[in-house]
Image 1 (cartoon, rainbow, N blue to C red):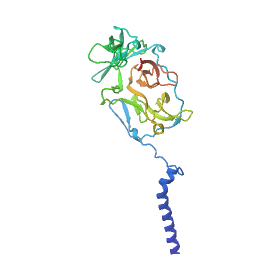
Image 2 (cartoon, helix red, strand yellow):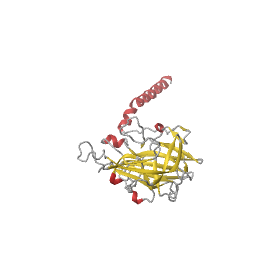
Image 3 (cartoon, rainbow, N blue to C red):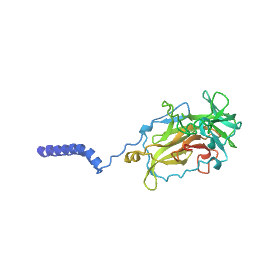
Image 4 (cartoon, rainbow, N blue to C red):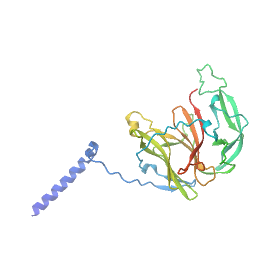
Length: 309
């Protein structure tokens, strides 16, 4: 009897050891699927109103979504106008006249305000379009946009009946892209992006999820959730280097610049760029006060420029 018991124990021990050794091979062959651990994101509230999430512990979803045909980057399709300051714009893409009055969102040492300002538009050389080898080099085929004072606005807005001058609650401000400065770290809306914002006692989650379109191709989806609502804001193809890039959902859907309560309705508004084409820059203002029924925000203005001449 003892011999039978010892023999049985030895058999089961050998069997368990064999399974443990073969387990990685079985998974590699696809015979067994590992059970994923549930995500355990660690959150803490910062003094900016953002509920920070440890995105390394958050698992992306892969739900089925259609790709947006988001080609609405024509400013004339919006009643509200949007503008950025800078010195490297193509002249034919800037319709703003020198001396116009706009509302600018300014950050004065951490104190944000929306106030009236006068726009200065000047003719400059277009170095991006007409480089050192161009026969148009040095000619004033570009435009610069600036305002008076030492502080440049995050953005400028005009013809919005929802906005007025005054202090603005700001929950987040990110860096702008600067191809000349490698130390700049913009907040790209890539597959690891996930931030939460608390405003008037409610939490709103802005995140990027891995998804697939109806043809099963990998895409990235920008989602906003809060107040019992969920809104798909934008989708974009993954940028890939062959199969590796597609399998890993490389790239991003855009860049986040600012989050706050621009229209003072105790719900978050967003200023961000969204990718639709490789050579087109399109920055959008999304206001909560203009949202359609069942939605959280709505695009009300766009500042769009093209990288080609």
